[in-house]
Structures are given as C-alpha cells and as structure tokens.
Image (cartoon, rainbow, N blue to C red; front, side):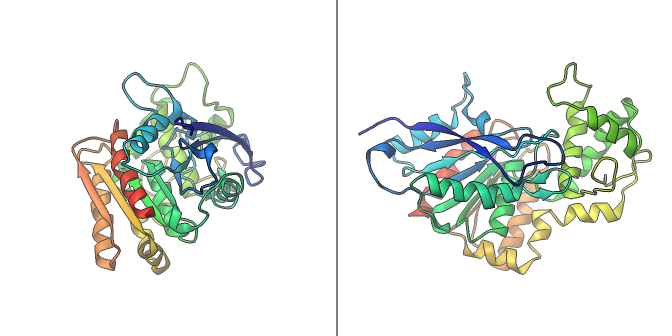
Length: 340
C-alpha cells in the first residue's frame, strides 16, 4: 500500500471565464491532493475545497517554506497521526488581475462563482473517487477565502455540508471602510482622481509590472473589492467606487450595494439561514488582534447565528491576520469529524 500522498495539477479550461472582462486566462491550474493509499483501493473519499485569500491562488499553498508546512505536508501529518481521516482536497484558482474574485460572479471580473460551482465541483466528482454528496463535501478558506467559503455555503447547501471560515471578510463597516482613505491617498499620488483616469490606469496595469507604484496594495485592495461588490459596465472602470474620488465622501447608494454582499447582511435572508442550519458544521475563528477588525465581524456574525438558532463553533485565538495556518489543524479536525 502506498504510504505517500500525491498532488495532481488539473489544467481546467473554463467556459464561463472565456472572454472575462479583465482578460484573465480562462485556463487554470488547480491542485488536487490525494491521500496516501488512494491508488491502492477503490474507496471513495470526502472532499474539501480550500479557497485562497486575496492575491492568492491554490498553487501558492504548495510553496515550500523554511518555517511553515505546505498544505500537503499538513494533511499528511494530520492523516498519519489519525487526527483526520483520509480526504481529497481541491485548491481552486480565483485570482484576477486586481488580486481576487471573492469567488462570486461580477460583470467587472467574471463568473467565478459559476466556475467553482458549475464547473469545478462536477469535474472533480467525475475525475476522482469522491463521495459526491453535500454531507461529504466541505468548503473552507482564510480571509477572502474564508469569505468565499461562508458565502458559498449559504448559497449552495445542495453542494456543501460543512464550512470553515478563518478570518473571513465580514462586517464591512470595519474591515473595508478604514482602507478607503488609504486608497484615496495612494490614488492621489498617481493623479487618479477621476473614474476615467482610473480606468486608463487599469487598462495598462499588469500585476507583475516593475517597478510597482508605491502603496500598490492600498489601491488594489479596494479596487478588487469594488470590482466584486459594485460592478457597473457603464463606468470607465467597469465598477463604481463607494466614495467620491476627490472629497472621499461616501456614496450611500454604492455602499449599500457592497453591504448586500456582507455575510452579516446575508444572514437577514431566510434561505441563507436555512442553508447554514442544514450544515453538519459551521466553524469560524479569528485572531483577537486582527488588523482588519475581522474578530469583531466574527463576533457579530456568531451572535446572529445564535439568534436564529444555527449550531456553530466559534474560536478566538491570540493572534493577528497573518501566520495563522496552524489553525487549519483545528478546522480540518472538525470537518473530518463532521464527515463521520
């Protein structure tokens, strides 16, 4: 019997990402983790979809590091020590020129939710020996990946029966608004003070350009979120910003469009509540010193879960937004137990 796991890189050419607005490649490299012994039997396995954070993609989780485990090393250790049962893990690619898609559909970015739900899940079930039912399919992620995980669980309980959200974007009032001024200051230094000027900049923007503008992340963070939450095909940018580019004054009508995507607002929808009530596991955690105040968002979210009667696990640990991969040990154990 094989005692080694394997990583298969699936090359997936997406139909729904063809001709996407940003010109991002429709062909994606999607790593698939197969546990030790997979090739030696005909057993079926539960599947976990792990979503990368903003500016990340699935292949990044395979990167060797001097002081951190790759996701393959982590899974190997957890399986060998019998902390979790053998499983398949899929590492999707939701990257865009602006840094990420939040794993939702947008006319400014492309149909990334459709890519995940209507293309990738069926493909994995077809090519691998999965237990192809919601009760044995989980979705998890950290930061924007955590956001994508909780949102997709709320929208697709027919596909996912367990969800783990690590430091996921929620309570937009705290996690995004403080970065609006950072965006405005960075844009001002580049003379990007009108939608037309911003649109011209983005038309020529290349993620691997050098030298990069100062404070590039301050620009991309909000640009990426606006492309996801407030797309507008009639804008020179393809999306609307939630503030005036000169005065910084909030544009309430655009901000409300953002809030409709906030997981906390989404919990006002009875269908989303019912979806989470169906889950075998709803797991959330966050560091108690998260730089984006996401621990407060998590506290609000779980308070809402309590109010509507959704069973859940919520843990807050001593830490920030970064270097929290060790928390996957906790969530993967909970997911594995939920599968049983």
